[in-house]
Image 1 (tube, protein in one colour):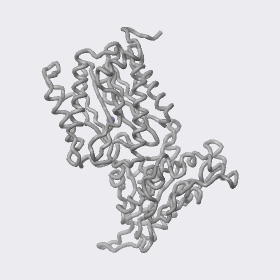
Image 2 (cartoon, rainbow, N blue to C red):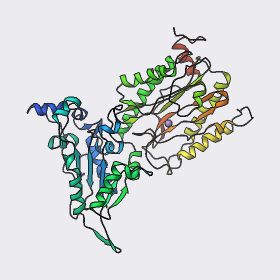
Image 3 (cartoon, rainbow, N blue to C red):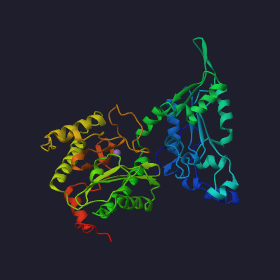
Image 4 (spheres, rainbow, N blue to C red):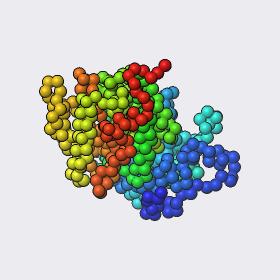
Length: 479
Ligand SMILES: [Mn+2]
């Protein structure tokens, strides 16, 4: 699907970028079968239009006018031996490039006087020996420029000297007594370790060569951009949610007394994988009994017992976008009266928050207030006679996107194009009773659209579906 017209970006790529046919040489063939090339399907890159990545870079440069943007991509070794390679989200958002060891330099138009905007991606040169282990790689040069839709793709080992050249070409302005040299915008992790990060060390090194260099965090600017999802991003989120819905369906059938939490987790993650999800968007939570009251319980080691509630908080990642869905199931197939009352309160609190949403006014904090007050107005009490809102101990929701708790400022009203979760919960450890219900919503001009509507949450329907999917007689159904 075509979302942005290609004209008007000022990159000279006025024609849609088409993949050329493999007709030249074995080398070209290799490139065509390279993983990156396989992900670049015509005008698409990682399931989003190349034009969209170009537009994002253009937008970023139009917002950051006074400095060079430098992004450091993930390396294979960052994930150790256990993880499959995953590009950093900001890098992916701006490039769609999954080549390990990449860098990106963006020079806004006019930063170098009279020069147009410049974008340079750096990727490692091909290494034919390495490729026997890891598969064919796309190397720097015109083929990569075409594949990635980026002005220039240079060799990664030229990154630092090229950056120095760019910085030294910037006119320094006299300000006060000293000379102000260039600003470099990059993603700097917070906290005392920031300086030890690759970005932090890069800037320190640059400062040694170019004293006075100013390091500015680009995270906030990029975060505000990432908060608003394009149609292509919305489609990927919907796909991630749909896969998660199938996983919730399957685990609903798997949960019964005698089954271990990890067995339910296996069923969930099987549904992810067979539907093309690359990985869970976060560690899958299957918490039964007392574990249902532990918010981020993910050991998933307990045997599910008769009478347990089971909180299942899982989200598939699909092409870098993750769902985040939670349902709470009665292990025995039927809620006890108390469980059902608390469950219904949580569900009604979610509905109250949904209903209270007003575009241009509501924030996640204001919706939380609605849910809390709804719980407080209920007649349900704990053993001390207190209302149950005090057991709602976490936020009501968050932005959802490439990060499960996605980036973006929370202080402003929830905007059109953002995707949020609404996830009230009540956790009463002394009753071993935890309930969380979490859905994902796209914010439109007409209000909230529930992306996860196909995952049943009505208690009657949950019970009916659990009964249909298998016998849940007391005791284990296992051998
Ligand atoms: Mn969540």
